[in-house]
Image (cartoon, rainbow, N blue to C red):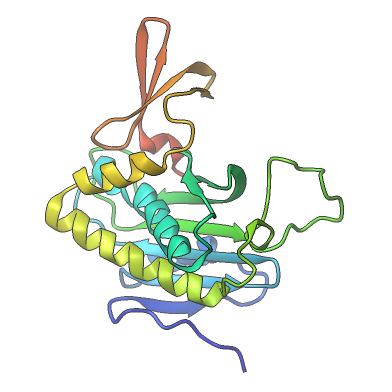
Length: 236
Protein backbone atom coordinates (compact mmCIF):
# COMPACT_ATOMS: atom_id res chain seq x y z
CA UNK A 1 0.00 0.00 0.00
CA UNK A 2 1.34 3.43 -0.98
CA UNK A 3 1.57 5.82 1.93
CA UNK A 4 0.17 9.31 1.52
CA UNK A 5 1.61 12.45 3.14
CA UNK A 6 -0.21 14.03 6.05
CA UNK A 7 -0.50 17.79 5.59
CA UNK A 8 -1.84 20.49 7.94
CA UNK A 9 -5.61 21.15 7.62
CA UNK A 10 -5.14 24.20 5.37
CA UNK A 11 -3.22 22.17 2.78
CA UNK A 12 -4.47 19.50 0.39
CA UNK A 13 -2.29 16.84 -1.21
CA UNK A 14 -2.77 15.62 -4.78
CA UNK A 15 -0.71 12.61 -5.84
CA UNK A 16 0.47 12.68 -9.46
CA UNK A 17 0.20 9.73 -11.79
CA UNK A 18 3.47 8.15 -12.97
CA UNK A 19 5.16 10.32 -15.57
CA UNK A 20 3.24 13.48 -14.61
CA UNK A 21 5.34 16.43 -13.46
CA UNK A 22 3.86 17.87 -10.24
CA UNK A 23 4.75 21.43 -11.27
CA UNK A 24 2.82 21.03 -14.54
CA UNK A 25 -0.05 19.39 -12.66
CA UNK A 26 -0.17 22.27 -10.18
CA UNK A 27 -0.23 24.78 -13.04
CA UNK A 28 -3.16 22.98 -14.62
CA UNK A 29 -5.10 22.77 -11.35
CA UNK A 30 -4.37 26.41 -10.53
CA UNK A 31 -5.61 27.56 -13.93
CA UNK A 32 -8.80 25.57 -13.32
CA UNK A 33 -9.36 27.37 -10.03
CA UNK A 34 -8.23 24.87 -7.39
CA UNK A 35 -7.95 25.96 -3.78
CA UNK A 36 -4.86 27.72 -2.49
CA UNK A 37 -2.80 25.32 -0.46
CA UNK A 38 -3.06 22.51 -2.99
CA UNK A 39 0.20 20.54 -3.08
CA UNK A 40 0.82 18.18 -5.97
CA UNK A 41 3.56 15.63 -5.45
CA UNK A 42 5.43 12.65 -6.81
CA UNK A 43 7.99 10.47 -5.06
CA UNK A 44 9.93 7.93 -7.10
CA UNK A 45 13.07 5.94 -6.43
CA UNK A 46 15.24 8.78 -7.67
CA UNK A 47 13.21 11.96 -7.28
CA UNK A 48 11.02 13.99 -4.94
CA UNK A 49 8.96 16.62 -6.75
CA UNK A 50 6.09 18.85 -5.69
CA UNK A 51 4.07 21.89 -6.69
CA UNK A 52 2.57 24.38 -4.21
CA UNK A 53 -0.42 26.51 -5.32
CA UNK A 54 -0.87 29.99 -3.86
CA UNK A 55 -3.64 32.56 -4.32
CA UNK A 56 -1.92 35.87 -3.61
CA UNK A 57 -3.78 39.01 -2.58
CA UNK A 58 -0.87 41.35 -3.31
CA UNK A 59 0.81 42.35 -6.55
CA UNK A 60 3.19 39.98 -8.31
CA UNK A 61 6.35 41.85 -7.25
CA UNK A 62 5.55 41.11 -3.61
CA UNK A 63 3.87 37.71 -3.98
CA UNK A 64 6.95 36.28 -5.72
CA UNK A 65 8.46 36.18 -2.24
CA UNK A 66 6.84 32.72 -2.16
CA UNK A 67 9.83 31.44 -4.18
CA UNK A 68 12.51 32.25 -1.56
CA UNK A 69 9.96 31.42 1.15
CA UNK A 70 9.62 27.88 -0.18
CA UNK A 71 13.39 27.65 -0.33
CA UNK A 72 13.70 28.64 3.32
CA UNK A 73 10.92 26.18 4.12
CA UNK A 74 12.91 23.41 2.44
CA UNK A 75 16.09 24.26 4.33
CA UNK A 76 14.18 24.29 7.61
CA UNK A 77 12.52 20.98 6.76
CA UNK A 78 15.71 19.18 5.78
CA UNK A 79 17.55 20.75 8.70
CA UNK A 80 15.04 19.17 11.07
CA UNK A 81 15.48 15.70 9.54
CA UNK A 82 19.07 15.46 8.29
CA UNK A 83 22.31 15.06 10.28
CA UNK A 84 23.56 18.41 11.63
CA UNK A 85 26.62 18.43 9.37
CA UNK A 86 24.47 18.63 6.23
CA UNK A 87 24.59 22.21 4.94
CA UNK A 88 21.77 23.59 2.79
CA UNK A 89 22.09 26.85 0.86
CA UNK A 90 19.89 28.62 -1.68
CA UNK A 91 20.78 30.37 -4.90
CA UNK A 92 18.79 33.43 -5.89
CA UNK A 93 17.74 31.69 -9.10
CA UNK A 94 16.07 28.85 -7.15
CA UNK A 95 18.88 26.32 -7.24
CA UNK A 96 19.30 24.30 -4.04
CA UNK A 97 22.80 23.54 -2.81
CA UNK A 98 23.57 20.74 -0.36
CA UNK A 99 27.12 20.69 0.98
CA UNK A 100 27.88 23.27 -1.75
CA UNK A 101 26.85 20.98 -4.64
CA UNK A 102 23.73 21.46 -6.77
CA UNK A 103 20.89 19.30 -5.48
CA UNK A 104 17.54 20.20 -6.99
CA UNK A 105 15.80 23.49 -7.52
CA UNK A 106 12.72 25.62 -7.06
CA UNK A 107 10.81 27.25 -9.91
CA UNK A 108 7.88 29.62 -10.10
CA UNK A 109 5.05 30.56 -12.44
CA UNK A 110 2.06 32.87 -12.13
CA UNK A 111 -1.11 33.82 -13.98
CA UNK A 112 0.32 37.28 -14.77
CA UNK A 113 3.70 38.66 -15.81
CA UNK A 114 3.47 42.34 -14.89
CA UNK A 115 4.95 43.24 -11.50
CA UNK A 116 2.06 45.51 -10.50
CA UNK A 117 -0.70 42.98 -11.28
CA UNK A 118 -2.28 40.73 -8.64
CA UNK A 119 -2.07 37.09 -9.79
CA UNK A 120 -5.11 34.83 -9.67
CA UNK A 121 -2.64 32.10 -8.79
CA UNK A 122 1.05 31.47 -8.27
CA UNK A 123 2.79 28.08 -8.24
CA UNK A 124 6.16 27.16 -6.76
CA UNK A 125 7.69 23.86 -7.85
CA UNK A 126 10.24 21.84 -5.86
CA UNK A 127 12.49 19.16 -7.36
CA UNK A 128 15.05 17.22 -5.30
CA UNK A 129 17.05 14.25 -6.66
CA UNK A 130 17.20 11.39 -4.16
CA UNK A 131 19.78 9.46 -6.17
CA UNK A 132 21.74 10.64 -9.19
CA UNK A 133 19.99 9.35 -12.29
CA UNK A 134 23.08 8.48 -14.34
CA UNK A 135 25.54 5.65 -14.70
CA UNK A 136 28.67 7.79 -14.82
CA UNK A 137 29.82 8.93 -11.37
CA UNK A 138 31.89 12.08 -11.66
CA UNK A 139 30.27 13.12 -14.93
CA UNK A 140 28.57 16.00 -13.12
CA UNK A 141 30.95 16.81 -10.24
CA UNK A 142 29.01 19.93 -9.23
CA UNK A 143 25.73 18.01 -8.89
CA UNK A 144 24.69 15.62 -6.15
CA UNK A 145 21.67 13.91 -4.67
CA UNK A 146 20.07 13.95 -1.26
CA UNK A 147 21.02 10.41 -0.27
CA UNK A 148 24.60 10.85 -1.46
CA UNK A 149 25.04 13.76 0.94
CA UNK A 150 24.48 11.85 4.17
CA UNK A 151 20.67 11.95 4.09
CA UNK A 152 19.96 8.29 3.36
CA UNK A 153 17.88 8.03 6.53
CA UNK A 154 15.64 10.95 5.54
CA UNK A 155 12.29 9.58 4.38
CA UNK A 156 11.11 11.52 1.30
CA UNK A 157 7.50 11.42 2.48
CA UNK A 158 8.43 12.95 5.83
CA UNK A 159 10.55 15.56 4.06
CA UNK A 160 7.60 16.54 1.87
CA UNK A 161 5.35 16.84 4.92
CA UNK A 162 7.96 18.86 6.80
CA UNK A 163 8.48 21.18 3.82
CA UNK A 164 4.75 21.88 3.67
CA UNK A 165 4.55 22.60 7.40
CA UNK A 166 7.57 24.90 7.43
CA UNK A 167 6.30 26.77 4.37
CA UNK A 168 2.98 27.29 6.12
CA UNK A 169 4.75 28.67 9.19
CA UNK A 170 6.67 31.13 7.01
CA UNK A 171 3.53 32.15 5.13
CA UNK A 172 1.90 33.02 8.45
CA UNK A 173 5.03 34.92 9.52
CA UNK A 174 5.15 36.80 6.21
CA UNK A 175 1.48 37.76 6.48
CA UNK A 176 1.77 38.85 10.12
CA UNK A 177 5.19 40.52 10.17
CA UNK A 178 5.98 41.38 6.58
CA UNK A 179 9.05 40.32 4.62
CA UNK A 180 11.76 41.32 7.13
CA UNK A 181 11.97 38.00 9.05
CA UNK A 182 12.04 36.09 5.77
CA UNK A 183 14.77 38.42 4.48
CA UNK A 184 16.93 37.72 7.51
CA UNK A 185 16.48 33.96 7.26
CA UNK A 186 17.04 33.83 3.51
CA UNK A 187 20.14 36.03 3.61
CA UNK A 188 21.75 33.64 6.08
CA UNK A 189 21.19 30.79 3.59
CA UNK A 190 22.08 32.62 0.37
CA UNK A 191 24.75 30.85 -1.66
CA UNK A 192 27.69 32.98 -2.85
CA UNK A 193 26.39 36.20 -1.33
CA UNK A 194 29.27 38.67 -1.34
CA UNK A 195 30.96 36.80 -4.20
CA UNK A 196 31.12 37.45 -7.93
CA UNK A 197 28.41 35.81 -10.01
CA UNK A 198 26.95 36.23 -13.50
CA UNK A 199 23.29 36.82 -14.30
CA UNK A 200 21.87 37.71 -17.72
CA UNK A 201 25.37 38.35 -19.00
CA UNK A 202 26.22 40.77 -16.18
CA UNK A 203 29.17 39.74 -14.04
CA UNK A 204 29.53 41.42 -10.67
CA UNK A 205 29.38 41.15 -6.91
CA UNK A 206 26.26 39.57 -5.45
CA UNK A 207 25.41 42.22 -2.86
CA UNK A 208 22.11 40.75 -1.70
CA UNK A 209 18.49 41.49 -2.53
CA UNK A 210 16.11 44.44 -2.37
CA UNK A 211 12.86 44.56 -0.40
CA UNK A 212 11.13 42.38 -3.01
CA UNK A 213 14.01 39.89 -3.21
CA UNK A 214 15.32 41.34 -6.45
CA UNK A 215 18.95 40.47 -7.16
CA UNK A 216 21.45 43.28 -6.51
CA UNK A 217 24.58 42.87 -8.63
CA UNK A 218 27.40 45.40 -8.41
CA UNK A 219 29.43 45.67 -11.60
CA UNK A 220 32.06 48.42 -11.94
CA UNK A 221 30.32 51.54 -10.64
CA UNK A 222 26.77 50.37 -11.28
CA UNK A 223 24.39 48.37 -9.12
CA UNK A 224 22.07 46.32 -11.29
CA UNK A 225 18.67 45.19 -10.02
CA UNK A 226 17.14 42.03 -11.46
CA UNK A 227 13.57 41.41 -10.23
CA UNK A 228 12.19 37.99 -9.37
CA UNK A 229 9.94 38.30 -12.42
CA UNK A 230 13.08 37.32 -14.37
CA UNK A 231 12.60 33.81 -12.99
CA UNK A 232 8.97 33.31 -14.03
CA UNK A 233 8.43 30.20 -16.13
CA UNK A 234 6.42 30.48 -19.33
CA UNK A 235 3.06 28.76 -18.82
CA UNK A 236 1.95 28.86 -22.47
